[in-house]
Structures are given as structure tokens and as C-alpha cells.
Image (tube, rainbow, N blue to C red; front, side):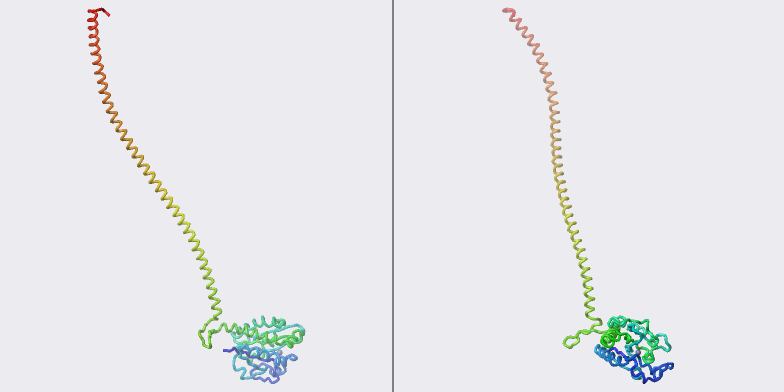
Amino acid sequence: MAKSVLIICGHKNIEGITAKGLRTWRAWSQLAKSTGASGEKDWVWDKLMPLLRDKLITAGIQVYITDAIYHEETYSRDYDLCVALHFDAGGENSRCMISKPRPDIVPPFITSEASLQSDHFISHWNETYPAKTGIKLRNDAVTVGMTDYYCWDYVGVNTPSVIIEHGNNTCPSDHETMFDRTNLVADGDVEAILKYFQIQSEETDQKFHLVQGGVEIKTYDKNPDDIILELSGKLKTSDDALAGKTLEANELRGELEKQERDNVDLSNQLLKAQSEKNDANRELAVVQGQIEGFQNEIDKLRDRVTILDTTRLELEQKVKDAQYLQASQLSIGILAKAFITKLFHGKTEET
Ligand SMILES: [Zn+2]
């Protein structure tokens, strides 16, 4: 739904004002003489309002124009925004100002919600208008005439509303800006209005439509560009996480490979140790075999010694026997020799 803006053109037709729509305490006959600063109502009506109106219509906003007096058909409804156009005069200081309706009057000019929305718009205008036009922001100089503006009696309490003094007409540079660069002045207001509605539109449930060849293919609650940005962000986050995990996995793989290499080394060492142990066992068996062999030889030698001992004893006996025999034979021999010698000497000669 298009946004609606009511433009009140300051002082226009003020001479025709009546008590209609006003609070009872307003001096409407005095208000009829409030024709504004020199050249103000014509500048508003002829120069600023047409530019503002056309720019807002181009932006798709429903624009309602009214003069400075009450019209039942105009004020029997609320608007998304009401802007009252003015300029100021007095002294040579550059100044522009903006004000919402005074919030604490009874009965109220405006609901607290619409008052907050007015502040919202004012913050946009404060940022936009002075920067655009070079006119100095002087909201400290806002007057009771602005906060208690008689048109607040007319405007519905649910309509966010502001009154704008666009510049000081007796300040040469402000005058020049307002009359020679009115387009800038209008742009200052329009930009604030568009920013204000942009923020408002974000709060409502705006839909985005994907259309191809005049046929709606899909409807999104969120701007697809924002969804893509959001998803890209998520994708990047998950890519980063994946890269981190891959790095971790590579480190683990490296450690695992190192561990595997260590394991191979250990099993090689184990095999070598087992092989060395087998060699040692084999050597031990050989040595044990040798020991057994030696033992057998020792046993054999011991047997031979026993045999030899026996043999020696026998031999000794034989030697004794032989000696005995020899001794006997010797004595026999001696006897025999003596006998033979005697015999021989007895016969032939004694030798
Ligand atoms: Zn004025």
C-alpha cells in the first residue's frame, strides 16, 4: 500500500480561516492576519510545493495538498506523514528548524506512537536537509508557534506530523538557496521522507517476487539479495571451518604416518632382537652340545683312567712277579755260574 503524505502550505488562504476545526481558545480572527513572512506563502505554494509534490509522486507516494485552513474532507482521515511548509525571517543568521506537535497538551494533538514516529522522521530530516542545503540547523530556536501550531488542531492524532522552517529569508545565503536552488530544498525534504518510509517499510511484511516472462515463479519474505549475502556468509564460515578441520586432519594424518613409521621401526627392532635371541639360543645349544661332548670325553677319560689304574696295578704285580722271578733266576744263575766256573776251574785252570 502506497504511503500517504499530507502537505500543508503555510499561510495559504489564511484570510479565510474560521473557528471550524480549531480549539475554542484559538483567536481565529488574529490567525486570519498571520499571512507569514514577506514572500513566504507564494514561495511555498508556487515554488516548493510543486517540486515536493512531483518528486514524492514519482517515488510512488500518495500526495495530498492543502492550504492553511480547515477542510473537512482533508482532515477526516489520518496520513502516514504530515508536513507543514514554511520559511522564517528576522536577522541575518542562517537557520532552519523542524518541530513535532507538543506532546503534553490536553486534549492531545497527537498519540504517543505518532509522536515517536514524528521524532523518527525529524532525526532523518536533521541528517538530510541541512547537509543538502547548507542552511544551519537551529532546532534550539523552535518556537511555541511551531510546537502549538494551530494546524495541529486539524490533523488527526494518529498522523506523525512536523512543521518545517526551511530557511531565514532575511539571511542572504538562505534566501539565495531557497529561491535559486529550490530543487535542493525540495530534495532535502524528499530524501528525509524516503528514508523515513524505507525504515517503516522494513518493519512491515514486505514480499519479494521472482518473476520470469510475466509469471511469478516464487515469493520470498526476505530480499533474495540479502538471503544470498547471508548464505554466502554462512558458506564462508563453513568453508573456513572445513579448512580448519582439513588442516587438523592433515596434522593427525602426519602424526599417524610418523607413528606408523615408528611402529615399523619398533617391529623391525623386535624382529632383529628375536633373530639375535634365536642366534643366541642356537649358540647356546651348540655350547651345550659341546659341554655334553666334553662331559662324555671326561667320562671316557675317567673310564680309561680306571682301566689304566687297573692295568698299572696288574703291571706292578707283574713287575714284582718278574723281579721275584729274576731274583730267583739270578740266584740260580749265580749258583749255576759258580758251579760251572768251579767245574771249569776244577778241570782246566782257575780263572
Ligand atoms: Zn510561516
